[in-house]
Image (tube, rainbow, N blue to C red):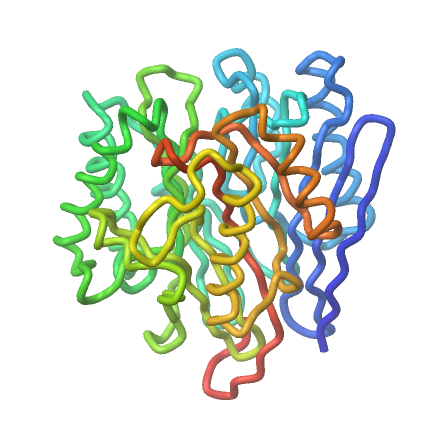
Length: 384
């Protein structure tokens, strides 16, 4: 038996949105979005408010849950990351992602945290964060970067190092990696290098148009160090059977990404004995010929993007009601009021965050990604 709830908590300084997938036996999971609501406060005050709200949750409503992944969205990493890392290092409890993608509500910080109960966690010697329960080891990585000469070399090094990290754990990129994120400084200039390196590394790992790729988001985002052009977050699972992983295509709405020269899956779902988890890649207003739909029209692009996401979810036998969180990326901050109003009307209860982050093709004004879960009974597989 599972129970899905989406409560909202508001304090004097923060707004907290929570998605709860609770089970009586096994692993419950939670998505939390914490927003500062006082843009007039200093960054330190906003950071402390978000941190206090998170700690209050762990001590109260989500007592017993453990974080497995956190992502902080900052407005100015060059001036904010050091203080954040100083605070989080003292109580580092999970894989950590920090990216400059300014919250569009005018504040300086927002937090997405993914938590679970009844799991064992540890930081592995190679930097991956391991979450163990039943037959599975979930391997999370956050904010990995290097300072190679350009975006192509940085991406190639990131992926090659990650392949080695997985090999150390008895895993392969093609068999075990479920999700990646690439945050690209000046995405209009540097994304081409990311694409080239990813395509070439993937071929060496038996990831091709004839096999499969990996669900992914490639989006504008910045590290505190201006020499870092690309940073990467990752999620892999050890212990899965090949038939537990399924890829989403929605061919009536979307085309295979290799048709326009890139290499990622539109979405992936993973079946466990007790649940199905679905991961929707960064999705924009695109048709099944790979073309931008409704150039220049933010309302119609948003509606088409929703239609595409809905088609992907339907293929996984899921709906928007199964989603634990949404991350919405806007190229133009002037579109925020319109888009927020549309989301508030259609998805009033789903935890979400709106951030400023150009999409990988200039014509796309908006992109969203999401993650969800639904109950499933399959005796062939071990429960999550």
